[in-house]
Amino acid sequence: MAAMGKGYAKIILFGEHFVVYGLPGVAAGIDKYVQIEAQKVKDSDDVVFDDKVFNEKISMKENPEHLKFKMFHAMFDSDEYLPKKGIKFIVNANFVSGIGLGYSSAFSVALARSMNVLYDQSWKEDKINELAHLAEIVAHGDPSGIDNTCATYGTTIYFEKDLKGGKNIARPIKCGKALYFVLADSGVKHESKEAVEHVKSFKEKNPKDFDILCADYKSIVSKVKKEIQFGGTEEIGKLMNKNNELLKQLGISTPELDQIIRISNFEGAFGAKITGAGMGGSALILCENDKHQDKLIASLVGKGFKASKIKVN
Image 1 (cartoon, rainbow, N blue to C red):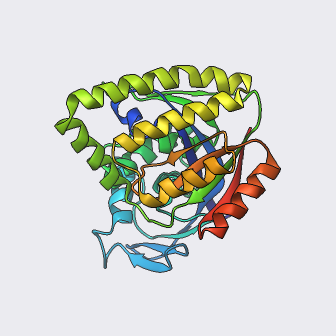
Image 2 (cartoon, rainbow, N blue to C red):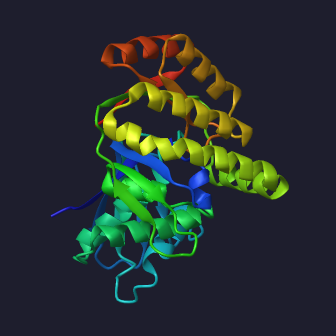
Image 3 (cartoon, one colour):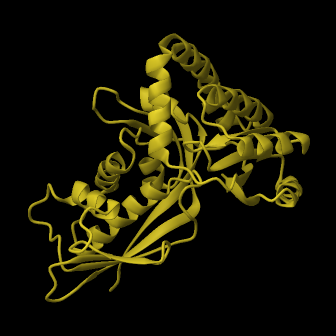
């Protein structure tokens, strides 16, 4: 039997960067994923990633400092009885990294699940989530945990990081009405770690301004959960627009992201904002229905952007 593991992509509806500092966020797992097949390799003391996404085959013995192996060690080295050699991982995905969908978290969850099956560990979902978060720390420095939580559970969640190191709050949210989004790729690849460091630097250099932005965001997110539960689509859109203005003040937008949002506003979107770390990546746009999604995508494609439909129930 193949030892398969899957981790889901995510969209952040509200809370990029603010969740790192203990404020609540709302995010959703979506139907894009990373899938990893783990295989035991007889008479081998190596670990190999055969990565079909990046079109590379890497060996731990030949390239021990590769990020994938640093993540692997962070996740599994504390378990002295878990085998950590004689393994081949085959990596596939139906989305790419660097567009704000949490690729590294989806990868980490898929990796944990494939090891769970390969060695019959009986890890529960909380354990998978914890292991993925350890890998995210290696990849991004000081992540909130919202990405790996969505990658694990694949649902819409209300999330709050415990800044004292305790267990994060993650509660499912039932949407009162389906939400029709367009995800638009700015075409600018980003590095989440760079964006996280940028915001940290902004906070250190402008503590009063950062506190004001946090207070403004807290006012926004306090209304979000109720609107999602009761299907207040137009109000959700207005709150997205307000959230995006705060993200722009943090300095993580780009001319391409700004252009996508202008096009979206012209086409009557309920709301539009950066999703993910920013400084590239994608924008998330809330539409009225399926036909509205098609119309907006046609406009964005006409301006040279890639865009796709996402439905959150």
